[in-house]
Image 1 (cartoon, rainbow over the protein chains, first blue to last red):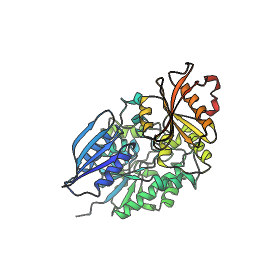
Image 2: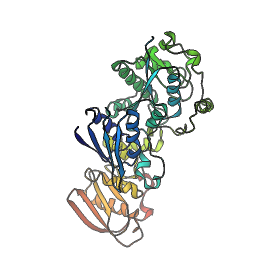
Image 3: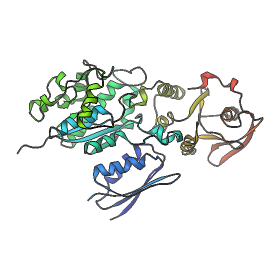
Length: 75
Length: 347
């Protein structure tokens, strides 16, 4: 299991989802990906994309400036 | 035991594509969704930026539709490929800069390519005969079939009974009797079908899903092309057309002035790419400057920017001009009176 990060800041919906989707396609089952976004829409869209595709959302949080979502790639 | 057939459905996030995919699922077809991102999709962009829209839902409707249907959704970035569709539309534009027929042909063609690469059997769209003036006229639906290369593997479940039979119907993969015969602009049949399926919430049918159908947006795009003397764009260009007030006092530069805190915050992300003006002595907007400006132009632009700050009526306003990162200049200027800001500057 490896930990990866993805910078999707200053991208607007659905680009953070597309970037996440493309990054996850390169990873192995069990790998963890931490995505950082500035579009608050990512807080609903990336978890929705994960639910559709069976990936686990380990953490999703928003502060004043950024949204951080941590995903574990489905087995 | 027969093989389960597989269809790729174009999912826009609207009601029609939701219903079309649902009709296929109910016939035992394995359906996966595909959604193309051109850069001009309305979705939640403006809501995501503007603070006053903070409480509006920011969900992506295509993802939401897929979740309602319980299907996978593949979102595909076609920003670069789409440029040729927009710049050179074989079938021309609609009322604004919307190349709807070429767009539909392109997207169905991309779905055909995806279908072939992924071992799927046919394509599903939510098109309805006569629903839209440009891309869904009865005489134009066969153009999409032909020019996309989808041919008889393109199924339009909502209006299939008004059209010629397709391969999936002839082969018995799907039952034509269970398809629909919707036509025209009325949304009532779709709403009744949605109710029958138990879909109580869905994206509003009116309003469109593409900025290119919007006159104001199209005007800004034309202005951009004219100013650059080139019909080209990057993703940041087309996103910035959705943000702020755009004023072009001279052909060689324009101001992008934020309208509120959310836009201010968003435009800050572009300060590395553009020269900017910030109001230091009063609350006010962040202004990006697109173009090559002389010293005199910077001063003129700063006076315009100050006009949109809370110092608009002050004798002087202090502004910070950043030409490049690290190259900052503080200036005291007199805000431009509103009477001197010409209507024709507004793009």
